[in-house]
Amino acid sequence: MNCNEIQKLINTQELSQENNELIEIHIKSCVSCKNYYKLVHGLVKNPQHIWDEIEIPQNFANNIENFVFENSSYALRIPMWLKITSAAAAIVLGLFIGSTVYDSRVSAQNTNSYSYIETNDNLYMAETTEIMYYSTIIETEGE
Amino acid sequence: MDIAAIKKGDKKAFRVLIDSTHRDVYRLAYRFTSNNDDSQDIAQEVFLDAWRNIDKFREEADIKTWLYRITVNKSLNLIKRNKNKFSSFSISDSGETESTSFQIAAPTSYSADKPLHNKELRNSLKRALESIPDNQRTAFLLFNSEGLTYNQIAEVMETTLGAVESLIFRAKANLRKILAEVHKQFSESTQVFK
Image (cartoon, rainbow over all chains, first blue to last red; front, side, top):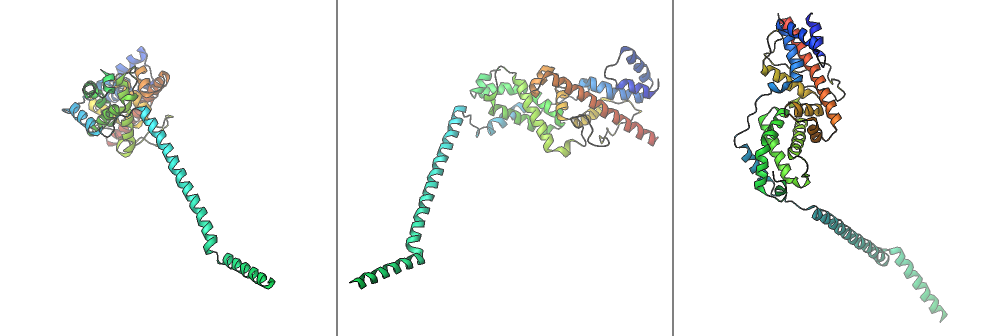
């Protein structure tokens, strides 16, 4: 079998005993196909033997412990019931403050509109003065 | 391991957890990142998260599985944040390559007509792993590096047993495709230079 045929065999997911033997014979004398077999078959099927040994840094457990307890101080454990109650209280307080502010704005607007009529509307004041003037004249003429 | 004590805030009990699991957490992070500093950062953050969220851990579950889940999430997040650093091309979830040609640089010492050594095989596998979808890589690493069972992987990845089987099958198929291409490219370049 030539290299292309062998590599096609290697590509198959599960190798039969017969094909395995054909491959074994071929790769004994073919470095390229041996490399192909290692990469495409061996490496994917059984990579455990090639993982590099990982060295854990010295005192790593201590470092982790220090890191955790130095950084977790701000994250005090708050029970869930307290979180829910606090959230509900915050919503109620927000609604209360919101409604109070809204009420005060509305009443302020009403007051402003009233004083506007009373003091700033010159046309209204002129008309009122004119009516009062004419009613006084009429009353005086009547006498 | 006294999880109930950890839940009450017992630091000594948490230290026991660190002692018994930090190697596994570090190793898994290293398999994803291939970088000591990143793996140390991830491992520290995993335990910080575990300490802060231990209330959410169900005691009937396996604590190691829970730590693995946090490690996977943190590792993948780091890889996403530093995408340029970790990957040069990728295969989509459907299995289609998102680039027209494979851009994995094979080890510099790679030559198709010289026997491959473990270091070269390892580098090729690392680069190929960086190129397959996250969920396939996760399932493959948990099975082949950490030796987890399919059931444990399903628990870590919060998915079904069938999904894990499928992910590992597709991971292997994609890795074969990529590694075959690496071999092809270097066989061709070796012939050109001869």
